[in-house]
Image 1: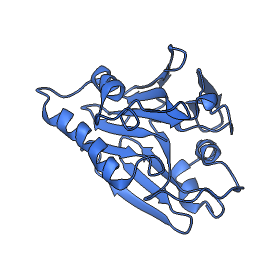
Image 2 (image 1 turned 90 degrees about the horizontal axis):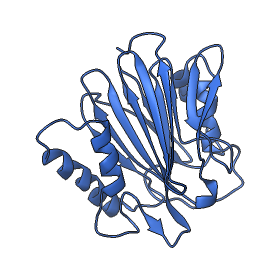
Image 3 (image 1 turned 90 degrees about the vertical axis):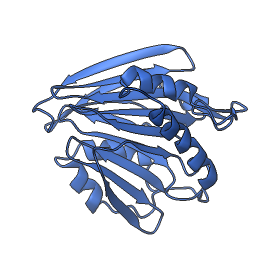
Length: 240
C-alpha cells in the first residue's frame, strides 16, 4: 500500500499519504488517543485495528508502508500487525528509541518513516535486518510501497513528483500537494497516485499532516464515501 511525499516548509513540513488497500479495510474518521506522554491522532484500520499514519502534539509524525525494498512472500501468521507497532511506539516515552530497540522477528516487512522538525528517519525491516537511514530535512522526499509497485514503477511514480516540483514557479502549499496526490499519473489507472486494481486494491483515502511551529493538523479524506475529517493539535513546545 501507499504513496508518500514529504515537503519541507519554512516553519515545518507537509506529509501527504495515499493509502492503497482492500476497500473493506477503509476507515472513515480520525481517532484521538492520549497517554502520559502525548496526545496523538490517527485513522484506524478496520481490519487489524492499527494505523498507517500518526501525529502527536510534540511535533512527531510517523507513517507506514508495506514492504521494505522488494516484494516479499506473504507468509502468515505474523507475530503482530505492523500498524499496531506504529501505535505501540506512540505509547512509549521515546517512540524512536522504542522502535530502535524493538525485536521485529516475526513481523512482516515494512518501511516506517518517522518525522520531526529535526529529522527524517527511514526504517526498513526486510524480515532479517532493520535498515535505518537519516535523510535531509530540507529536501523533498518520495516513497511508495514495494509490495504494489516494482522498482521500475517506483522510479516512474517518483519522477511524476520530481517533474511536478520542477515545473512550479513557487513552493507548493498543502492544497497543491493534495491535488497532486489526487491527480498524479503515469498513464495507467492501476499505477496512478489514485489507483484501482479491479476493486481488489485501490486508493481508499488520503491523509495529510501539516506540522507548523505551534500546531499540527491532520486532514483525512475518505475517497470511498467522499467524507472528510480534520483534527488540530496544539504543540506542547515549538517545533524546532
